Length: 459
Ligand code: ZN
Ligand code: MN
Image (cartoon, rainbow, N blue to C red; front, side, top):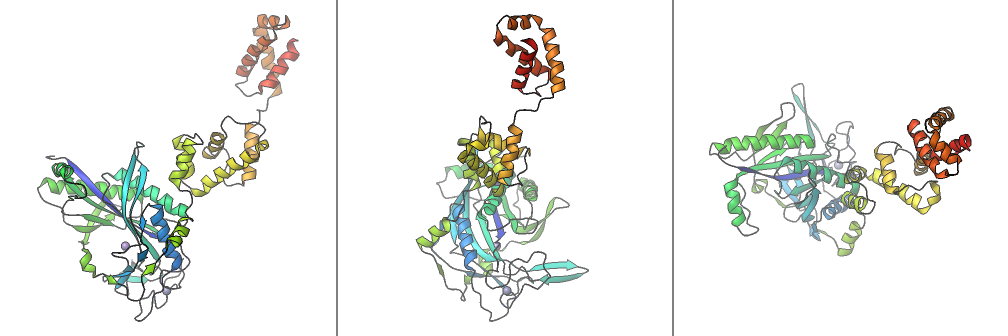
């Protein structure tokens, strides 16, 4: 290779909201697995003259996502029409947002593989509507409009990523946040979270000159390749790695890769050209005339913000610094909101009523975490049930009396001198024998029971 190369990666993430109804009509948004074309009406079929009415809940939820991603929320926002032709878009335009998205200029911090803190910019979070779905079978193309008009949130990051590992980590954190917010199942197999990385590669000489430039003047490569609609974190990682290699090969020849949209072929692990990439002006954006601008007061925005629960990164921080859990354990417990709530409920229940446990563990938070993580006690049971089982687990071990009697005899015979000392009044020496018996029993005995058995036999 003649040069050093630096990948520059940005992300576009689409998330379908789990609202009851669609974005601009009253049809049920719960379309997955339903009979084709049964969740439709004149609005979401794009009939001329049908009027859209925005879904209030969906707008609250997109704002909530924006707030969770540290964005500035625009108190005044509007919808725009984005024009393009495709059979799954019967109106000939998608209602989306252009220059006044609900949220912009945010960021998300993650810990990378080596636990370095990294911050990635969120350019915008906007609201739009999903399209119908084409099904190609037996040489025919069929259209299912059940998905048409389902509320869709688009999250666009800054091109702040330089490697596929950080991208994967970021996406996993984003998915966890969306699920904590309770606004979508973010299930990639069902298509409710879809991923589109855009990738370019820069020779590092030009990077040096970038450092010398004043802040804000980012010199990006003169091209960008977007890989569309990927439905797994691993495929995103592979698609990025494939593209970076492909771009470097072209750059090595002194050429630039074509600006285009590509698709990822899962079976072959390669990307394939789909179409040359459109520019924004190709879409002929203009304000949606049927929906007035959306205005929110500070009070309304504060009310939405108040519905955001403690987020996974905050919980993780709390578990490590206040509960003194290992980072790895805290990470596992915080990946799922239900698990972390269950965990905290147990801790709180015990703290409010310490007599529930007969033995006080050295570190309650660690002990309970251990029971959950190592599946010693299932987390599918009630809090009370869990505590009952934990009490059993922490109970002194049952002692096999037959084995104990044999071990006591063996130890007494082997250490007759110590036995004499004890008989002579040096009773503390018995602890040495207790240790020996415990060793014989491989720890499967209660120390107090062992001590009593020794006393009985010696004194
Ligand atoms: Zn409809
Ligand atoms: Mn979009």
